[in-house]
Length: 306
Image 1 (spheres, rainbow, N blue to C red):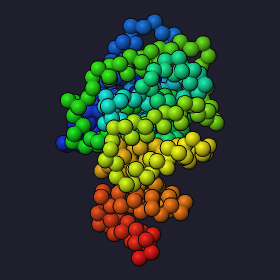
Image 2 (cartoon, helix red, strand yellow):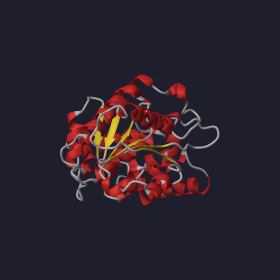
Image 3 (cartoon, rainbow, N blue to C red):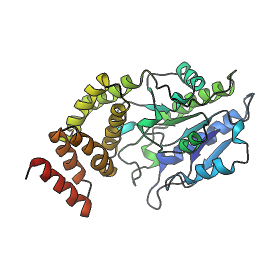
Image 4 (cartoon, rainbow, N blue to C red):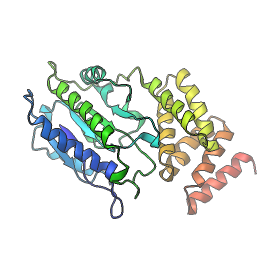
């Protein structure tokens, strides 16, 4: 299966990256793969109502016209065609291989320097792959991830890098064909096996930000330094998850208040690192108003002992 969602954020939001580009990849691959002599059928689906709660894909897995038990794998595309965090370097994120040794093997054979393979738990159930994961269907999720215009009016067609998008689509096409030609059908692992290169990939993101961004706010400067050190020494899943959360918050500041206020700030507060927690809450205030802003101000006062 090759899948994307076609709904967007409403009037005034072009939604070129999220997710017209994903639908374009589905259409292009469907046209290309139709000419291939593959040993399996390719089902291409565009889902509605992803933005309001993954409703289209959830409906599909409950009412599929094709028996889901026959599905070899689901390939999901979302938010393509723009660089993560608007950095000069390009990253194609591939998530989900931790749940299938067979798919992990396919991804490994097609690895390129700009690919970052990571566990899906780093971002949580943020796209249509979640519905297939609940049904224990092996999946891969492809994305270039968020940018400053994510869910905003600046997500326009002119902002897309079509050369890079075509290159990523070519890699995805090969992965789809390799998966279709596997001698052993992919099996869904109950216990994930996380990619060994995951920590290196996260570290690379922090290094790139350090080289390209000299104007980090105190919150991100403190967090990134701490998390970059932690991911090398802490073997728990919590640290890479926090690192990914911090990167996603930085990538789209105007949507960062929840992650800063309820995930990152409380973590450092519980750790007793008041200076980092205060900086995080001060960053969250920039993107908050009303009751949320007042609560953050009270937290800062409490941490400062005022």
